[in-house]
Image 1 (cartoon, rainbow, N blue to C red):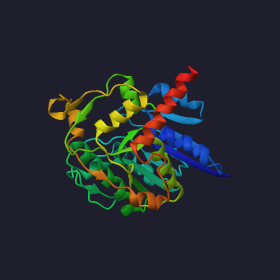
Image 2 (tube, one colour):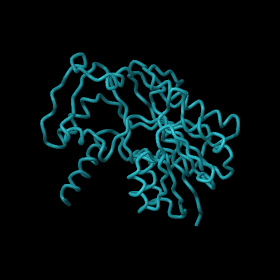
Image 3 (cartoon, rainbow, N blue to C red):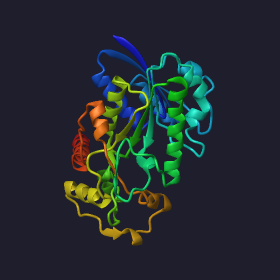
Length: 301
């Protein structure tokens, strides 16, 4: 049996589902899983799954990072960028490039780097043209990590994620919590991807590294947010929230900013290169899975 080590900077929702999938599919490999977290409670919770987490306070350095990264074969960065780019790159680049066992590095970025395209399609080969601060920071972080390929031949892979949803984080949960709103903006669509499809795409890349490659992690059907809320309400058998024009929605600045970019994210090259079929090709299949999981949990409580 092979021995491998995955170290995740920012062990959260994506890394959690990735690790679960790895344990199911990588039966010929013994994985040593490490990561960082800002949640002290999470350290104890994941210990039962043989996952070693290091609690890292905001803006604090890990003093023994070199020893923690020792023997790492796969490195995943899932930490949001700041003004000067990726904080992990800026803090630990010397230690990372000194790891002589590295086979694969993954950076979880965002489709916000494409900017506003007035509803047009973008592909993995489209240029980055960020139009928001959030997108500009992601783009800078991407450039930092890709520079390692040019300078050191590091096996870097960039994953541009659309809006993440899944069990516990979907329109189903928003309706349950009473916070769902159907906001209408003419011609506007969002792109999204189910958490289980993110996990299978990242794992496929880990199994077949292609340094320098950019992947679009998005499903097959960009759609307006109000249609997603309607689908969730219909699944649950509840009344749809009132449709409100964005002009009268009184959205918080952060929420409003998500409506400033309008594009359709293509994923054909990604699916072909990774040789995968999406489990949830549209929000309809994905929401149904979320609803069924919710109902299953309710029946066992």
